[in-house]
Amino acid sequence: MLVLSGGWVSGTMLSPRFHPGRVWVMPREGAAMRDSGRETVRVFPGLGGLRVVRLKEGETVEQALQEFRLQPEVAWAEPDYQVTAAAVLPNDPYFQNGTQWALNNYGQNSGLPDADLDAPEAWAVRHTASNVVVAIVDSGVRTTHEDLAANLWRNPEDGTPGFNALTNQHDPEDDNGHGTHLAGIIGAVGDNNRGIAGVAWRVQLMACKFLNAAGNGYHSDAVACIEFARAHGAHILNLSWGGSEFSAAVSNALWAARADGLLVVAAAGNNGANVDQFPFYPACLAMDHIVAVGASTRTDERWSQSSYGAARVALFAPGAEIYSTTQSGDNAYQSRNGTSMATAFVAGALALLRQAAPAAPAPVLRDRLLGAVDVKPAFDGKCVSGGRLNLRKMLDWPALAMNWSNQTAQVRLTGVPTHGYVITASTNLQTWTSLQTNTAGPGGDWWFTDPASATLPRRFYRAHPGP
Ligand code: CA
Ligand code: CA
Image 1 (cartoon, rainbow, N blue to C red):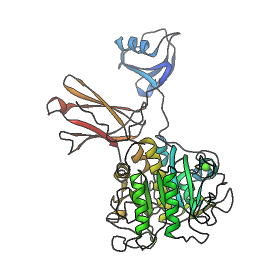
Image 2: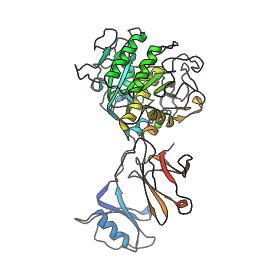
Image 3: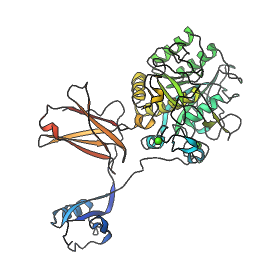
Image 4: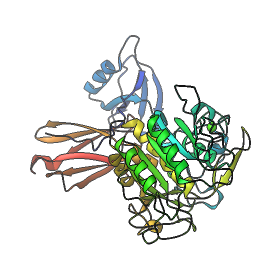
């Protein structure tokens, strides 16, 4: 019997933990509990006399449970499981005060609750991408910024954080602010009590400068940056720029990047245009490792100036009123709008995914990204996926194991405690039917018994994150 866990990214394996010194005991209705020689530390009269019992000296939880389960006056007994927080809330002040609505939107500042990445839930699965190098091909990065310095890539040759195509030196300082803003969205240091939290709390940000102080640059300098990034081990290119002119040179450079396994995330453009009709490059280059991103708002609408395209834009991501780092000081932050910002959210998300699945080819990661969006009416017909980035659904892939008992399939799902999952089944590995939606218990487990398995032909099971 083949069991599929549903893709390249294996789920988090959480072994259930419980208190070593006490157990739950539920008396049978109307039965009087005998004195077992153990101290009752808590009783819940409103729950049928359910109680917490302290174990004897030297006794294990297993021994105590075995004894209680044999007593006729005991309905059931179980371990006192430890609960792991299913959401991780970093201490960065602009996350804590709700300014970073894109990561966690609870309706603050007239936002729509849950028009967000579900970042706290995703971070319960993974928040670091320490092995992943994201090249920000842009205006450079303020390398001394308090919330970025620790996450900069370092060139093993000379310790510098990137490349400047305008000087041909390794001095990619930002004199515009655009690149520094992207850097913070992707990977500002998370949970460091300063500024903001990046999508990835730890990641390697490679600063590649080709845009000047006014935010303009030439294809030749962009290609020099892309080639530097490719030669120095970048995994993801963030391209938050573009134009209406197709360039064979840029196309060739990105094709070469594809051969080296790089993912490319590119902005759909801020012209409010249908890029299926009026292409914007490099976002609209038709390659399976390029992800074109449109911008959404805190109410899950398309940002009014965001371009779109049912065929050419892959998905939407937050790109309006986005607060992040800027270049004017080491503790400077500002708000910006644009598909540039949306692109950076996706680049950060892909960094976390790539950390989880380092061997997965770029198109597979792209498929996972697009399969995990929150589908919303505003994006229907406006992009390939019809939805907005959801980080939690992308990362939270559960593991499955199974065994047979009395001709019945028992499937054990292991995910994150209290997160929702869906178990599906198929007889041909092509058509999948939803069997049940449920939430994992306090140990991260969900045992699912498929009663139909006793009578139906044997089938395959897999699971994915719930809505
Ligand atoms: Ca949410
Ligand atoms: Ca921070």
